[in-house]
Length: 366
Image (cartoon, rainbow, N blue to C red):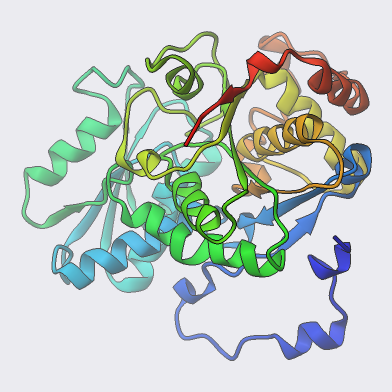
């Protein structure tokens, strides 16, 4: 694929495509750019393309699901004027919902586990939402942020619980919008989609749409250490080993949005790989990635190594990089976790990926 067809446009073409004056900040959600990662594309012989979801007004891909869930709830009569939206979240959905709530005249209550990036807490409060912090604990604990949000909402008729894990308006946002955007931007020339999963909405909606219009496409799930999706797809049971400092990524239970996904292959990668990728593209391409985005890009490089040159691979920049500044770009934090200031060169990582045993990739037969 000629890269100019994907991400390059003359100033005249750009000017002609500018939108008229918009009437609400929620109209800025979606229609994000697709960017070629030059250094990794040249290294791999593939077109590795990044969907720039940090361009959404709330700074993340979760703006899309937030808007769709609210619009559908209003249309169904479940969310009415004067009500308060409630959601349990690790951060980005809370920011997206806080933005949408403020723009559409609703109050917002966000329930978040302690220990998330302080940048996320700040943005939620800047949008005027109430933030309730709870102790981080396993999902089985009734005080888990998910159960806490559900309990609050069910105890008052003036609350509406967004329920991002089970509410399929989440994946609908990507089936109706993100997937078609990718198809249009690549002019139908896409061989693989690579994505992490938090709620499963992004990979669920995009993979359903793209596999419908391009039956031969491969959808790769990339899972961090400490998540159980890779294990579930491999063995049928949720089991996790190790841990990751990524936030809001990985699932340890079956949820409706992830059940929408059409996954072909699954891998798990350690934090050291996403650190190496983040450092590399910052230095070589001027692209600063958050931790989830860096894991996505590492997964795209892995897919390129296994698929071979000549393929077009799309993945996501999930959110603004500064939301990972206190961890991914914090020397003291990384040192405490045992990570060196010098990472494995990406050329070596790519060769390692090519030579890793094939059985490390879970292949799912549809």
